[in-house]
Amino acid sequence: MDALSDVLRVARLSGGVFLHAEFTAPWCLVGRLAPKHCAPVLQSAAHLINYHCVVDGEMRVRVMDEDDEIVVKQGDVVLLPRNDVHLLGSDLNLPPTRVSDIVRPRTGGGLLALRHGGGGDATRLVCGFLGSESTALNPLIVALPSVIRMNVEDSGSAEWIRSTLKFAADEAVNNRAGSEAVLAKLSELLLVEAVRRYAETLPEGQTGWLAGLRDPYVGRVLALFHRDVRRSWTHDELSREVGLSRSALADRFARLVGTAPMQYLSNWRMQVAAQKLRDSTASLAQIADGVGYNSEAAFSHAFKKSFGAAPGTWRRSPAGTQIG
Image 1 (tube, one colour):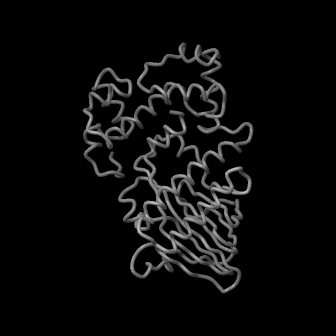
Image 2 (tube, helix red, strand yellow):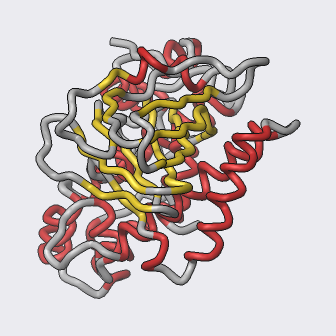
Image 3 (cartoon, rainbow, N blue to C red):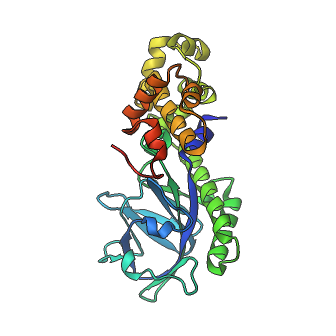
């Protein structure tokens, strides 16, 4: 399994759509995604990613306390990986209306529906989410910026993205049987495509996990770690595998990823262990062995240092809660 697929698997991202909206200019809203918007599709999550698909028209988006204003046009998707409070509208200089003040449940249940604005040019959105139970050490979630805009027309995958958005809009409006399951999978596909596109367009000199993934030497180390997390890797082995000296590799890895190779491996082992604790009935000894620890005591110590609780206590806690 490649490193990106492995990280997405362990993040346990699950998604859905919660809102179909029609806005007419002039309009300006402020808000962020709340857990109640995700129910009943997502029962619990420590972290939420919000996204907006523009089906018709266009809008502007800006994260609060940031200067960059993004224009999002028909067929585009804007993701907010940190679920920051943000403005969206035809004119972001207008006094914003809080989303919570105007959202109303759809008659008969189903998706939330929203109509708002001054009667001018129309913009139609489908808004959705992805949730994860644990992101504290997940390298991908940490590496993503506050906003990602996916321009559909800039990619060879434009046609399937456009078709996906249209299909999502139709599902959201018609609320057919099975819509929630369909829209959840579409949300996950859109995130993967957006992350891949973002990684492909990173400028030279950019640092972070995705930049490391693209680097021929660091990317190879990441692939080795994610292919065999259980192995007791050494600096010498990694150096031989990628064809770079120990010191050069360590410097390159730390500069791009932000941590030393073995520290990254330790952090990733804890992410994998947490996923296994949630998703399996394996014993602590089995999980410890599966992520490269010969001693259950050493594993428990490392896990508690990362998550603030012993593995057994963490496993019994409600999903999405923070301990310690």
